[in-house]
Length: 242
View 1 (spheres, rainbow, N blue to C red):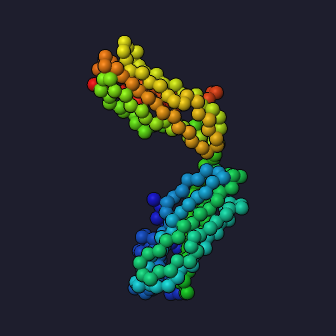
View 2 (cartoon, rainbow, N blue to C red; view 1 turned 30 degrees about the vertical axis):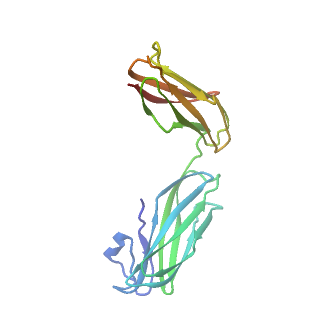
View 3 (cartoon, rainbow, N blue to C red; view 1 turned 180 degrees about the vertical axis):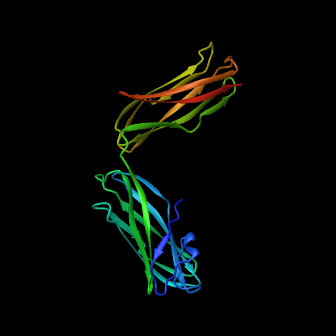
């Protein structure tokens, strides 16, 4: 979490050790406010950075704190504060700061200036975020259970989830195998065996594992494999038959 130091100007303002806590007081024990911004954000090109602005009343401050954010680092950066005016009847208030980072933004660390003011009080702070490149197209394969215990003669069905990453689109083929291969050993099947993903979408399949009354009691490994052209991901489920 990032607690941003405040640098502010107010009538009769003075610098004190309170700045180490992100505060800047206009006068000792006089009504004032402070604010902090969380979290420190990593955002990919062409997506939205979201911050929470927490405003705190100090020494019985009451009133509305107006907020504004500006940036000179990123061209065509769209910034919004909701709400852009927070009313404090002592205590705390919150606003959400969002910034849409254009896909053309170079990778690196950027900042914008957040200012809050109320009557003769004004405080400012720098908000930082890191822009990462768009990840290459890919997909993820997950399950809700990676360890299963079965009694002889029983079966179980668990869900498989496939998720598009980085704009991946395509058809995925699913297979399941059990090792070691033994007489009367467990069997594993998936249904459906083909899933089509759209960009940013998800798909589901069911993995069914069955045993018989003569399945040897021991540990097995169930390997689920999802492939699409040169893309391939797998997951392992530990099966114990008892």
